[in-house]
Amino acid sequence: MRVLVVEDDRKIAGYLKRGLEEQGYAVDIAYTGREALDWADSAPYDVIVLDIMLPEVDGLTVCREIRRKDKRTPILMLTARDAVDDRVNGLDAGADDYLVKPFALKELLARLRAMTRRSADVPKNIVLQVADLMLDTITRRVKRAGKVIDLTTKEFAVLECLMREPDRVLTRTQIAEHVWNYDVYNQSNVVDVYIRNLRRKIDDAFEPKLIHTVRGAGYRLSVEDADETA
Image (tube, rainbow, N blue to C red; front, side, top):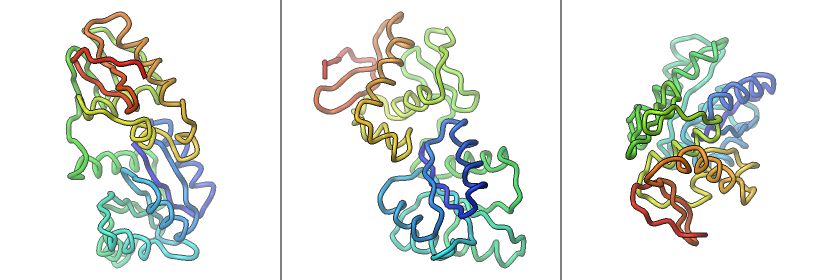
């Protein structure tokens, strides 16, 4: 899942980036309102964490501009002010939720999970299953034929991306956009490396093979035996 964090305090921004990445999120950071609008126009995000007090363009204006362009990306507004009017203004600008500073990271993570579950564009399944492969998005546990499979954070994110849309061919770019930040996913072979790791862990010792390469297109997760060498 890809997140845009908009926060001018670099210490807080770094703290959020580390905490979110530890939970498997891909994180880009904008330090000004203008940067936030540029990022929102250039990349698809699953959720935006947006501070109200920003240089150049304030957070409320950023939120309104994003909504004006008919983007329904869930937005969590951060504010150091706990006045009712500030909260109302944030929600009226189009934010889906708000969080008052200072806050605990676990509360922010809980808010993000709740927001993405409410989003109409995000599947609501908590446990995903294809054949005998199961992935629990809450406990972050993966099993194949009842055997627990140990995955790294990014391997888990790639597998979840594939399992969210079984039988559909996903390009390398589509997979990378939801797993890595902008700088990383432009490295052309990073997806291929993680797909090889996943095959070794969830396919090599099991039947049927589930991860398939579609020549010239990308990858799909399916019970159908239609593997093609890229």
